[in-house]
Length: 143
Image (cartoon, rainbow, N blue to C red):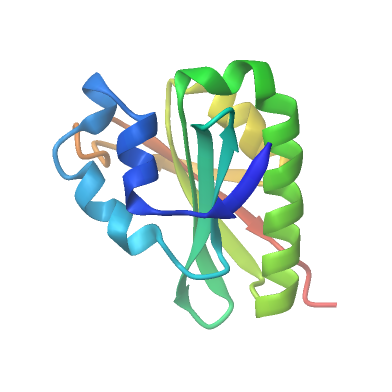
């Protein structure tokens, strides 16, 4: 697996059909933050992209997209994401990373919890498609 800086075209290469909901790809250009967003490539195919987008000092929005090809590589991808999030949060002084996860996306919920995120609540009709999403956050102790 090769890790590299995320490019907006990576999202177009990994998503299709309903995943390309109107408005979603337009948000991808804001998710490309130098040194804080990456894509995992296997055999020339993007299997996942993830990153953190600073909102203000100490707080960032976490995101991830994956292709149908991620299945065979999901453990390796999950470990890489955890390492990258840990490193960036420490290096950039981020004490809170938050994410929005579709309420029916069980795999993403399990991944977020494995990464140390905790559910904070349900955001009704939040998504671009009008679906409910959970707000998850990983908050580091101030010690």
